[in-house]
Length: 198
Ligand code: GDP
Image (cartoon, rainbow, N blue to C red):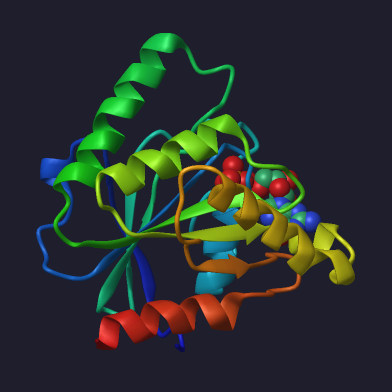
């Protein structure tokens, strides 16, 4: 997929106020600092469409970007940031939960995980919650450039195996990406393109 346009549409914390257009939608979510903003900018070939976070946990809103006039990329707040207060966490949980439960346009979530890390409880719990609620998702491994090429795929397979050893009967689709060297860009955009054309 060639990106011909990518524009910020709106930010809000109320799913009822999200864009009222029947376009397919893909939501990007992960722990703070996982590399979500960098990935979005890399995918869209924009330097600062999504704000890369000097201060993790700062972007606490549902951000809609319209891509190629025919789908929405949704940048959701990063979770699991220790310095966010309990009260903020509750508010966050409420509208993110609502977003996933109510947003009919949502086609798939992309859960971002740092390829260097073993599965973290907060990520596993979130994926389990998506599964329980019947929300399709794929895993995006980020920062692949930080590992030697020979161990990248092995690390991803180890991660997926841990899901299979847990509650999952089938591994979700996965993508290995790097915002530094643009790895995974074609595969990920191709995946979205293929679903949009179904
Ligand atoms: P966010 O909080 O998930 O939006 O994460 P950011 O995109 O702001 O990235 C967090 C930090 O990781 C920043 O210092 C980025 O420069 C760095 N980073 C993000 N993606 C990559 C990547 O693919 N490779 C490397 N080496 N660093 C990355």
